[in-house]
Image 1 (tube, one colour):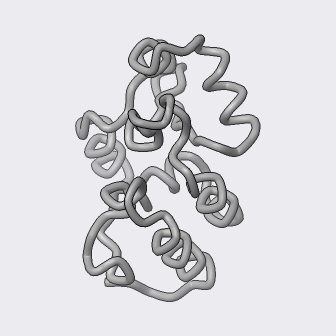
Image 2 (spheres, rainbow, N blue to C red; image 1 turned 30 degrees about the vertical axis):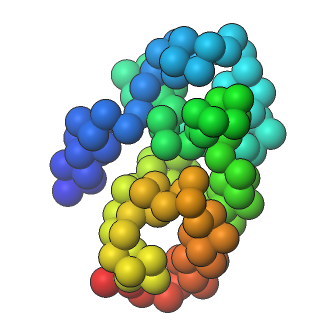
Length: 126
């Protein structure tokens, strides 16, 4: 089941390699490393490289990480690694009216933060 979930994430088109992401954002690849070290973004490891979520960056904000993402990641990292965070962002969430957190990141990060807190507290969503 884990492999099926990973395949769904990889096939979604929501993640690009570090070089592809940097090129798309017109940034040096090292900037992505810096943002990840600062906790502003996350990545998943696949085939020996890092993949970054396209939904984590705002096109109209100088291609910076979405506002509020760091706070959400700070909460989720208490119990999840990169793949777990990717699964959480891609899964429908009852707290968000059945929407996926990645769909709302740029429009309602505060509500996603509340959902992340609920996730860490162990509240079950279905």
